[in-house]
Image (tube, rainbow, N blue to C red; front, top):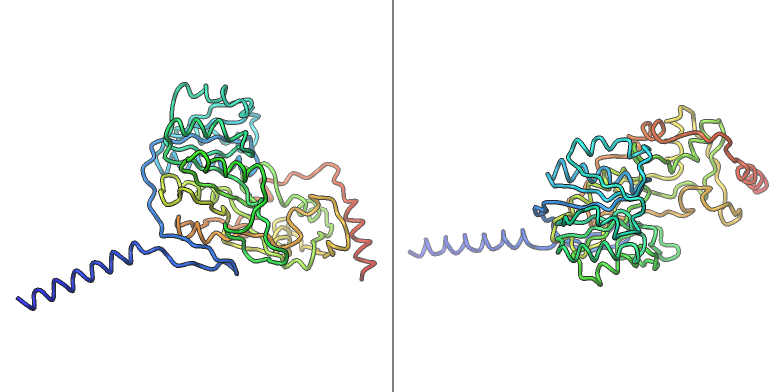
Length: 369
């Protein structure tokens, strides 16, 4: 019947179009002036168990804590941690009862650089996925990566750093994964994973915070605000930055484990929410309960010691568009919502803070006025 043949042909065309639309890669997206090609989201496969090679603390330390919980509770995976030690009962280690309750096995190692001794603690066990949250050089990552290759892992995730990016001078837009990088130890570790032929994914986090971090990027602001002192900010204070909750970093890593489309990829590991330096200082003032007295200085005219200001003089923030498109990543936290927690949990006033640089800046800004 002609009418039936036409209907069947139309249905076939419709089905073909639907399939094509489903499988078609997403178009190139633009991230604040920088383009990056991304592909459609893929549901992670069922990796049964994971080994996390974990550093002793700080921002990366809290990422490992949240990641272990995410994999064990949400993904129902067996999780073992080879942990840099010793356990001193400080954050996040003092919350490891949560890991034990979730069935996570923590094996403490005095020195992760002694890979043979640490791997021996596994007593012959092998894993489907490895997350390296410790290595900072090709020498450090090599024995663990080679053991993972021996196991035939489905995934080797490496938590690296966004500090390697070297954007062109004067380019202050969001940095995508295609930006030029310098040859740091972590970059060389990333390259080694590719040379070994491992199914790797690399993550480059930037400015991490959380309730179990044990330190604070913002302590220099809190130190001054809590004492009624001004806070000195380089430039005009409009520079943008991201501060990412460690649980959001961990969620991105977890979303990639077992995702075949994440293999061989590098992801910026940060929030999509930006805040200016001035607004961040004002936010800190609200947590302390005082109005922020912000004073600006010209970083080209006045040389201050490295670390005086916790961020770069110029805007430095990454785009997470690739992770959003490919992994379905959406941050659940924001520093605006968490600033009160961050102040109460992470700030410990110094007994004898040094404000000598502040005095120098006061003189310099007064002279320039």
